Length: 135
Figure 1 (cartoon, helix red, strand yellow):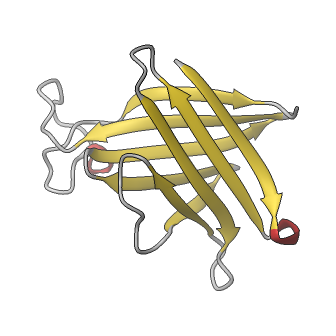
Figure 2: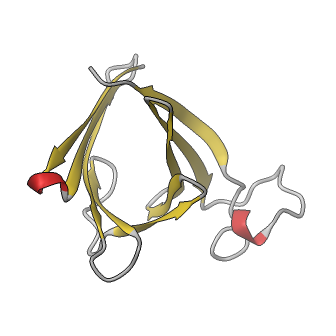
């Protein structure tokens, strides 16, 4: 897979624009664009995001800070995506995990955090870890 991601400060530093694009070996193309900004009323970060797989949501996703990690769970047509973003020195680490809507045949027990909205979804599984350095 070939991918390109950029993060750019905008609006005098009140926002960060994210642009993501990748192409699979079969030629399939995916792209997304997002903007992170601080919620003026709460100590959270808002993520406005649109991509080629899901329609633009009516409201932004709410990200939370936990131990220096920015986390967000996004719900889409295929299931859930959990993103964790953190700094490791000068390197930005972005971990993406997926959880499908369909029941998992391998899931036994599991925690409420890993259950689907109806209790039948799969556990989160790692999908991609990306490391970004300043150019």
